[in-house]
Length: 192
Ligand SMILES: C[S@@+](CC[C@H](N)C(=O)[O-])C[C@H]1O[C@@H](n2cnc3c(N)ncnc32)[C@H](O)[C@@H]1O
Image (cartoon, rainbow, N blue to C red):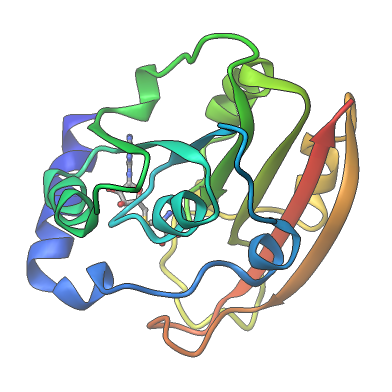
C-alpha cells in the first residue's frame, strides 16, 4: 500500500536510529550455520537489512524486500562485493513468490498473516521458515498498537500446525534497544 511506504519513509526519516545495524534475532543466530552451497533466502520487510546481511555473511544468497525507499537505499549502501543480496523496493501486499524457490524465509517485526500463507509454497521441502514479532500482552508499553499486527497466544504454532515441524518456539520480552517493552513470539519451523 502506498500509505505504508509513506508511513515508513517518514518514520525512517524522523528516526534514523531505526536503520542502525543490529544483531540478528537470537533464535535465528542459534540455528543458522555457514553454508557454501548457494542456498537461497528471502527476507521480507527487511528494513535496512538486519537479517539479509547476517544471512549473506553465512553464505546465503538473499532476496531482501521492503516497501521503504530509505530502508532499501540504506541496505544497498551496506552491501559489499562478496555478499549475494538482491535488495528490492516492493509492496508485499501483492507479492507472490515462485513455488519451492527458497531454503529459508525470514519475517521479523512484521506481521501479515495472508503473506505467510502465500510464502509457505515458496519454501523448498526441508526449508526453514522463521517468524519473530510482537504479540498481545497487557503489560506491553505500546498500547496503541493495531491489534491486527499483534499475535495471539501460541498463534505461530497454529499458523505452522500443518506441513511443518517445529524446531524451536519461544515467547519473551523484546530486546533493550527497542523503543518500547513488548512481548514477542518466535518460531523456527522446517517444511516436511
Ligand atoms: C519494524 S520494521 C522490521 C525490519 C526488519 N525486519 C527487522 O526485524 O529489523 C518493518 C518493516 O516493514 C516494512 N513494510 C511495511 N509495510 C510493508 C509492505 N506493505 N510491503 C513491504 N514492506 C513493508 C517497513 O518499511 C519496515 O522496514
